[in-house]
View 1 (cartoon, rainbow, N blue to C red):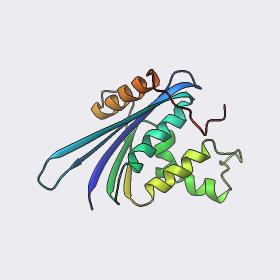
View 2: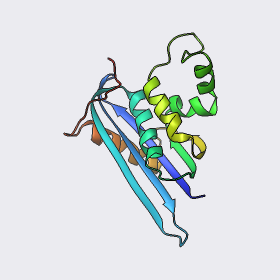
View 3: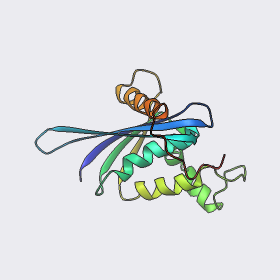
View 4: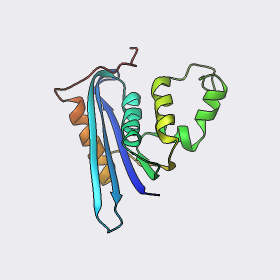
Length: 159
């Protein structure tokens, strides 16, 4: 099974406001060659959490076959949903959180769950803006996308 590292970050200028995500995928081929791919996209109006989710979604949806994945994000919102098993509780309660309130961003959570499903994933939280090289690169991609010219609509954002 191919091993891949996925790093992602999301950003929004205002919350809500223009936003973007940045994702870096890295794998080493059998001959030892390291391959990287960078993904990013900007949106006209969105939230930081939606962009954190989109960064993760973009990384997992880019994988063409089941992989062993080490996923890195500075978003506790994304990482803890998996590591602290929030998702099964949300689903059991009909997409309500522990306070019986509707879970936000259900459209993206469902998309991320489907994208993660074929893979063996270990989730890692990294401190943002703390000099982690790949996280800093993802942040630069995300903020450049948010500030870019080719912003698209976040179809699921209901702000």
